[in-house]
Length: 255
Image 1: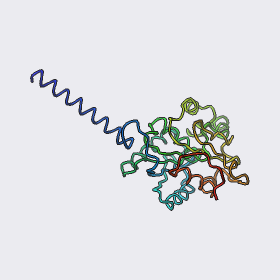
Image 2 (image 1 turned 30 degrees about the vertical axis):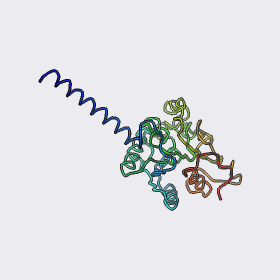
Image 3 (image 1 turned 45 degrees about the vertical axis):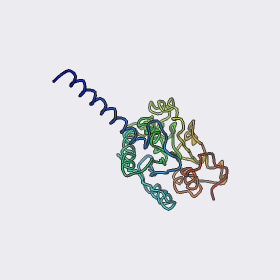
Image 4 (image 1 turned 90 degrees about the vertical axis):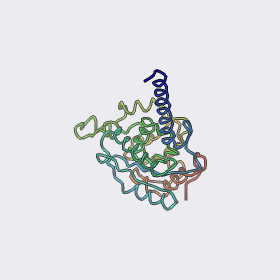
């Protein structure tokens, strides 16, 4: 083979590799590289369960989203939601890829409790800001919870990987604390001051997000941690947060 022909073949292969890489980025991001998902075109809503992987309450919330015209799916987490949170983030990534393959222009996430930490890890480890239009978290221990800290300290053999990772000061959470949210990613964090599971409740506060304790809008609310996904006021906040209007702090308690 002549040197000129070898150069031509090498150049053609290189061009094909570049085209393939650009195409992959576009498929992943739903558009040109570097763009954010169109806020006016909501895609599939993926709901991520909390520690233990229970789907019941989120299935009810998914039903409300479906009734509002959205496509909503509850993610099934491996290991009943108690295994390594990084593996759970990989499971979420697979669900995102499936939604995009089905034609969704982007995804919205609703992360309940530890599911919000999974969403945060997914954004960080899987370039989630390129395909996530909006994210809403409910009572998520984004900086850990004392309950997990006590479990890890007093009964380590009974504290699965996710339990240890949710202990305040864990290596995983410290790494996330040092990682800012990507610019332009709309994130609504909702929590209740009556949270008996996530202590302190404002562990759900996230720099760069719209942070809303329920009682700041609904002073009489006694919603517990477990009731967050099904509470009418919280559901109203979720529906607002996943709408198409610019994400901003609500100014009143949803009816």
